[in-house]
Length: 76
Image (tube, rainbow, N blue to C red; front, side):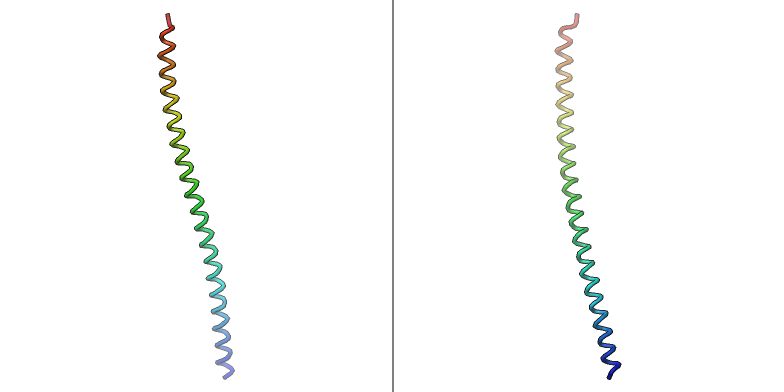
């Protein structure tokens, strides 16, 4: 009988360890999920910044062409 009680205690201890490990893994997965979400947000922000920079570069190019045309009118 003592062996059965001991075996049950051993199984209970193992189950407690498994439960604790599962909780730790769950927390780790949640942290990974949060990090991925943050990386996605940063990637989207970077994409928006690239689009803005492209638009600004195109605008500068157009302004440069207009300025060049205006200056050409003053050349002798």
